[in-house]
Length: 261
Image (cartoon, rainbow, N blue to C red; front, side, top):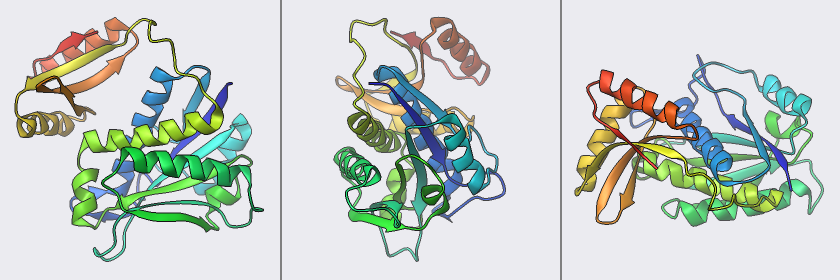
């Protein structure tokens, strides 16, 4: 089956959303949405994705739902981070509270919620919920809003600061979307993607430190275990030339890297 999916990173621009522990919601949810987009595009057949924003700028709530409706999306996922007073923690998901029982959105929520908590086991399960949020009410397709931890919780913030843990959250989103949309995995014999590796370390903390250096330069990255070592991956590309361009960019930052296929 094929599917058109809208990925909606909340807030942006002058609207930073929640904040805490040195983090801003608008930045974290953009990372999760981009990781989800990358996983869907790289691993599943016949899926089209669009993001309501691709960088740090503001998009009105109605613009988000109109964008999805005009494109004729099949599914809509809005990414958010919660906040309270530092005492709350965990993951929760929402669908519109005006829907009938056993709606398509409810089935979508069940699949997505379950897959996210499978991949992000460090999040406490706060349950499946309903609300009258604009992006859920005004969209014409099954829509879900995820609250991926509490930004003002030290426990949750530790994971929100880890690109590896954020990729796990994104993987759960992607798997949930794939399950409900009936997406097929791409042939494993397909041409492999080119990855840019910016360091290989025997110590996880050293790999994390290199990742922080990359993040300071505006380069998305994550740490991956490879055998007995930890690799810092600074990008995955379908085109090998684009991967080589990234190596040059990193070199200009004084960071050595190489292309791995």
